[in-house]
Length: 452
Image (cartoon, rainbow, N blue to C red; front, side, top):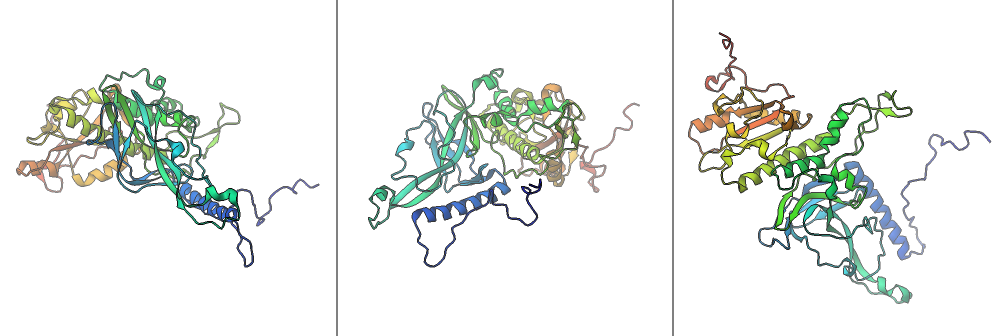
């Protein structure tokens, strides 16, 4: 026998992994099983399209404490309507804003009134006993299936009477998955830094930093708390939408962007390798610092997580103008916006918030902060997403700018809130040049005579 007999030839159909659809023709006897196979084929085709688009949240599904129903011993979240795609390519649609109780009373065994007659890829979900109480949890949305109504039957097969439901509903369900306390045992839950440190542990920053010391080796395919959960209770059917910290006093915080991600399409570079790794026989090598699609999505989430937490800090503080960034943030995203106080508008103080952080021109008042054109901020943010977050524990340099349009509006006594923009010190300086298109009062000047 030739060695090529088992080798696939050009233009030879490969049936393995193919979608099998029912062939309809006049005179064929159809059964319920045939129609179920046809439904399965359509589901598989849709799932392949969903997997090509990528997993994550398409829009909506923001979770927050429900102010009308939330109680300390029975917390309730309000989840906005939205759409997500899980790793299996299934679309998860929440059609309306929904209140979700974190203390479960619903018995899943009583959810249906008929047999599971249709294909259910995620039935059952990953093993795990429901738990609730003090701890850190990930709230997820996952597919569910239920039956609805009754359909008439000809009675030819009495054994199928229990299957005569009129419709099966592809629905969604919410799940609360506990994070093992050992994963954050070194963090102090009573510290104001706990939320930020926990969020960046979900981002996998520590694992990424460790890998940066040896960038020639293979970039780790998984990192962070969410990837660790994937080996246990967090199945490919689940889409994480919120990180929840629950104490004896009730919900301490609900952090959406610590685990929520925008749609992440498959990365064509994920398997790309430049050459064999000479240090590990048989192992392929790639550069870990390539700004891959996942890193960009995570950078967007870091920026959104910072703005959400900053808003919560501002709302909870009685004197926000006295707060310092390092009190609440060990890590800053590569780009962010900080509102400043101007009574009656609440905000932070420039000198206090950035105190102890290396910046230009250094410690001082807001008046010494370089100007930037507000029209540049979108481009600066896009550029910043390619960079790593800022570790304040390492006293890293930070660019801080004042949008000159905002400063001019304040000078003209318009009703606006002052603001600052900051970005990773790895970026080039985007400060507005001298004269700034002939705006003499809102330009930056070099201290050419500083040494005199």
